[in-house]
Length: 481
Ligand code: C2O
Ligand code: CU
Ligand code: CU
Image (cartoon, rainbow, N blue to C red; front, side, top):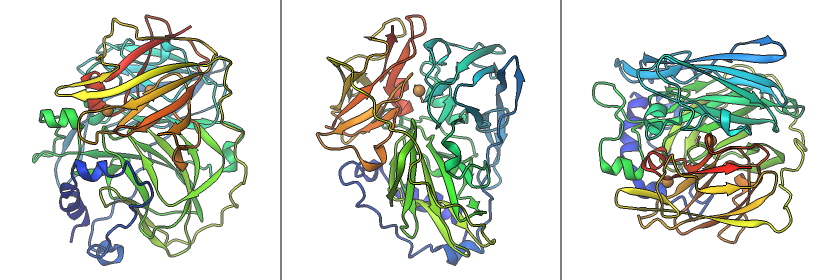
């Protein structure tokens, strides 16, 4: 049996929105994947084998103390399923882009060339940089032109990412394949497995819906627009159920949910424990043991997993009940160092005196997606936020639509989640964040702090990271001064 086909059509198609919505309330309960009909051993011999692709590290040159990268956003094509060729977009390649890796305090320049037939932008999701170089909807790169982003790196070790942010086109352009990782390293990075592609492995998880001819099928109905795109295959670094062969007994996975709207509850097929070592905004203070991890679009998590010689397990999504990647330790593994107990300094954001509370209510009704009752307007600044003064933001989800969760993302900062419905945040949210899932009827309080400015010509954005919702208008603009 071809497992890829079986999983692609057989399991995913049976999962609807209700299956996803169930993840809101009872974290950590839903962790029984049904392996009876497709155990790993049963069909691993007959399914075709795809090695986990690793995005290349982006090359750079050093000029005048600056690291200079060149990214070309281009059209391409790629074989994902059967013998079909899928038209794609990519960065310096056919699909997805290279991993940019820099150090805290580096001076970075990225020349971004737009070789598409349409305008685009490139946003650095998770980076603390001025609005001018944030790559939001105002920093358009016209067809055949280039944009130089000047990025002064000023934040702790973390896994950020880049993707287009074109007004009303973000969902489509990301879906076609424009996305890549952006690593920031600091003196703490090497306390963890840190050899790129060997024991420090990027995993970009995205689902895609394929049409009969192999093309991506993007937004076919009002339903897709309102609920967000749900695919019939899940890709990891652009491959369907690939196999990763560990080299060492500990592997660090840097996981990005790069999907437009699908939420995953990640874990392993044998329900083993793993250690969370970083959230969106960087390394946590100490590793946190857990068995499953909820990851909404835009969110990242870094985990360290122990594997023994001869083991054969899978990374799974407990929501869609799908295998995402096989882990096959049939080669002899080298022993890794034990995991450090303390990996980073405290992430907590200190409260300024007389903190302001700002309100953000996410809602939907037929055909619209709103924040505080408004849809996005490029010519309207919604909020004026002070520089270097913490604030508490109250984010609520009063969607009238059944169980619609919204991952709320804020540009230009990392924030701390203070509470979720009056309780402590989920364990995998106890670190710096820039995106937080807000389920229906939930109220989440976050503490934000901005150390970079954004003016009215180049404001920062806050928005739902369900990209179909973003494109529907669930976004607002703010300046920091
Ligand atoms: Cu990942 Cu405003 O976006
Ligand atoms: Cu962002
Ligand atoms: Cu949303």
